[in-house]
Image (cartoon, rainbow over all chains, first blue to last red; front, side, top):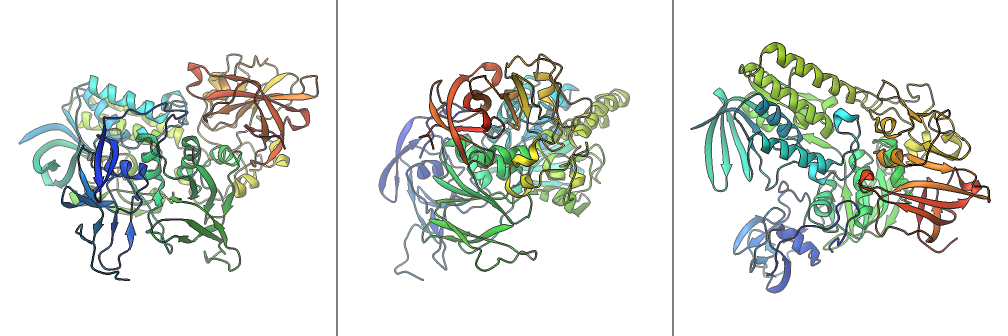
Length: 108
Length: 528
């Protein structure tokens, strides 16, 4: 969810409204904002699942330090979505281990 | 290989301040920062800062950030963003990763101002999406306009936990509770009070038992801890939340100092592994300085002064300023820094149990345990008086280095004196004109204007209000007490906003006069 008007900050400067895909589904966000913010606005909580135990991970530090929020962006895995600016047409996929491919069966 | 007089790692408050002082002396300075925007965490700080004029008190953090950037730009400081200092070698050679290449630069002096990183705590479910750092919450709402969650539990009652809880409410989140394993609130009482009066319950001596949820947080269970920090069975409490915010301290990010070979120490008073520095911030390696949180966790206000001192020291070292002139400038900065390091939250006071103020007034125990001063405690503080007509009521009950209220009053009703940590007292001889400058100037939102008896059975209370939607004159609702409980119905008599108030609106509410010293917040709602 977005904050439309803030009591101290007023309104927020935003880039151009663009579309991108998340696991093939079309979503909208503002160009230049971190990918993770556009996803959070769309209600996406899980960015990846860990390799061995298939545990979900999402935004934790939001400043590029913890690497919990990494995803597959335009085919490249391990992209820190909290500090990578959103661009029009980006293909963003949930990361499983270190790939965009979901493992054959549930591992738990 | 490029050469600079001063290379700075980190464009936060310390790094930028050092760059400004060094550039003023004529030095060629570069500042590297790994982030896409400069300013460190200053741009996430939307509250008014504490201190006095020289510490930029009552100015909001992000405005201080804007001032620093403008000043650095005017002086020709080169700020390189998206650049990570990855190596610091003997002879002050530095490697920086910029985009996908590495540059090799050499400095005659170096300042490490890399700041700090957030601590975590672990509990079952702590890796679930929805468990975030308090810094992450600030980044989302204050930089990007994204709501971190709808219902939030905050863990940590230090200043970060308190300030971010308030900011979460300003952004539109509900803070369901604030928990801390410590038995006492760690941050400023005034920060706690402004959160408590909005109705947030404080659970001291409580920690998180577990975060619940399958793919993301759907709830949290907290429990009371005994003196060995073990959860006491049967004390568990559950809250439905979608977000758990962790504000459990900061650790210096001092790896570069260690890498450079600076002598390091593990110093609990500085909150971690830090380089040993002298009074100018110089490490054991001559010409390599450290300033800000990297050399000991404090506030942004002190980081800025430490940065200025290091910048001047570097200029003396390279001969850009005479030792006499430089030392004089440093002495001014040291006096300012010393001012900030006074009071019951000074670095040297960490972990100490304080029972009395400097004036000999007993500290409110309820404030430490529940986040607000109880009705039977408030009267003993010097800011509480009962003059006829409108007068300030200053609910500032701890010795913190802060004095804007004293200068804000055009009638000199408020006295702090030379000692910046003294509790503000009301001079009843002077007449309050109800201008509200003191209410808006108080960084702790602890000043109210009260007319205890308007003559018609009502009292009027003017309070600082920083939420949206802003109530309007004539709105009916309820008054909340210091604990955040509804105590009586209230009507908005006036709402004032002015540029001089800097986004703090002054809301005046009318309540039955018996609630003059109890009602401290307004909520637009059906009357009780």
